[in-house]
Length: 412
Length: 56
Image (cartoon, rainbow over all chains, first blue to last red; front, side, top):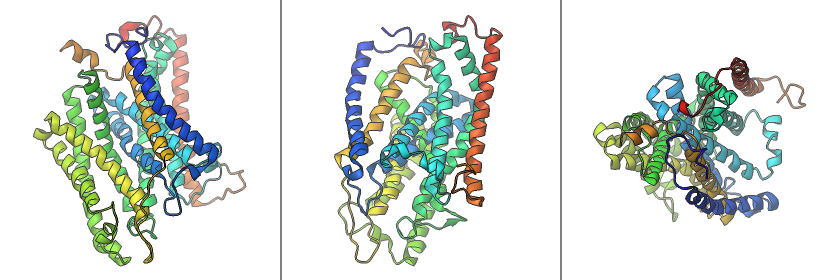
């Protein structure tokens, strides 16, 4: 039915099978949209946010998708600015993932502000002393960059490419893509960092507070570095998911291994910095504010020392070792374990820096404030996942997302 | 956002935030304008005409 739109030579499942899959995911999407409309019509009382939790579950989701979407800016930087040409075979996937992640982040923010029609106030009435203002600026502008990076791929659709104007536009945009990629990397460095800076400057919350360099707490640099390090892990995870679902090899191993190796070394340097930061915070910063390390990990039902272990060892040291050592990296199972652990590790880091920060008691008369999100928060957090599945499925079916697909199929 | 907005102040914060924002918008705008103009010229010169399925 839609064979004229499918890239030439590519093999895709029959249209009814595809449409059925999309319809199933659309039901989940509609559930999320219903919850989103409730939040907009009835207000943020639909959530379980309270005086302790000014940030709902979706703010964790927001920070997590921005971190794992970091693969787009970092892969773009490596490909277009540093000239690592092999990555052209996975950059399309990274851009589509980045586009989905950042559009999801903006959607989440539109729900979070409660009145999206006033979203433009942050530009018009900007508070230039707020790190979140910088995040809003950079996030919006970087989404524009991702849209610009996505357009040539859309124009390469088999039918659109036949139109001379679209073909030429796609070609010309590729020609200046390095400028856009460099701009995107600049914007990403600042908004990823500022998201970390938001936690790091909270001097009233010793669990989050960090010292730093000039106006930037160390969390600023750690967030930027971790997004660049772990973003490619998510790109590779999605690539492996596609290969598993379609039972086809879509990207050559040398490309996978190269990106995995770069990600591994980035994670290694990041996790060393993170460990030093944690030791200094636990040994100097927190005690100066009257807290010991175990104050943050005891006397509650959920946040034990296990979460620190899981974040640093399972989500940091293990993927770093598996991805940097060639023998492990080239083992398919260990590679898969490493990229999944890496993705979960950065999501756990964002969880800790958003939700645990608000759960930890600050005053001597305070108790731990554990938080159960409402179903509306869960639904609106799952909403971007359903949207992402639909969009990436459409992109895979109708766009040349994997340039090596045909070659790999022919050589089978 | 603009110097004619009532809360605008000529200070370092506004220079940095809005300087950075307008600088970035300028780069993106100029880049896309260049692409569109070059595409119009290329298309008028017949480039890409007769392009079909053989491209990929």
